Length: 150
Image (cartoon, rainbow, N blue to C red; front, side):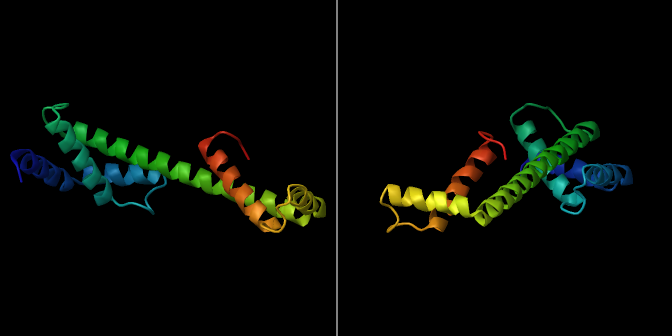
């Protein structure tokens, strides 16, 4: 362990003894509705890594309470954005699946696919669900990438 690590760990240990600092992280996690996914130490460990990188790269000279709080806040905000994106993707996937289910209930939709498979002489190689599954895969990729919306 080098001097940067020791000094940073010492400062973080002092801050962890402060109820104010812990309450700040806990309250921020609750504010972003992440308290059920992460705890204070998850944030502190990540903030410590970032602070050490900034000190080593000489982006900052030393760490203090204000900087560490700011780094912790940014860690939490980034986790919130990441969680929001994941939930958005899950919602889009569910919506796509609901639309596909409605289309599968339609006889004309399946008849259309069957007619196209026969037209291109592919009906002996693929069945209707092969086409639906592949179309879902392609559609989901385009929705997630933002090229199309559900």
